[in-house]
Figure 1 (cartoon, one colour):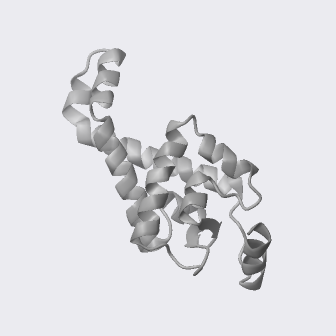
Figure 2 (cartoon, rainbow, N blue to C red):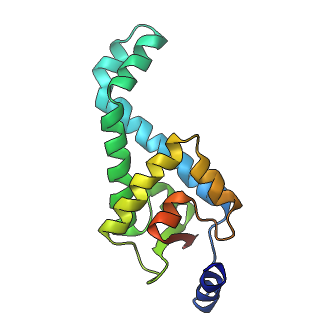
Figure 3 (cartoon, rainbow, N blue to C red):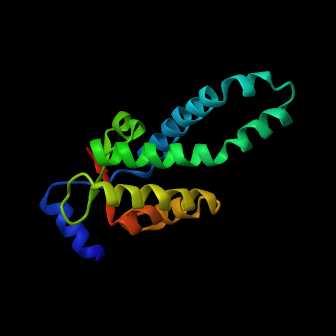
Length: 149
């Protein structure tokens, strides 16, 4: 499969996105999502008097935060082939078979598995750094690649 992917990319004159671009896009997306979370929990967060109270507020909204992350990732990847961070970094997600934006099912699959990649000490992302095609667990699961736009 690895050789087949490389042939497809070479034939289409596409290149895999470098790890640094993907990491920067990840950071941008996390900042955006953190700001959204703080806005969502606003009053409770700013009413907290200690750091411990702030952490309790954040933890009380953890399911909502996970839902927002899944929606954010799935929607932007399906609609634009990239999240805001990826758009800024000029990289995008493509389905291996079609080299087009992933459909709703594939985008949702990728977004959900991405949560597990993060939850298990970011091992899914480490896997992507070591993989020949730079596919993290969520890319493997969804059969997607992240390429330079």
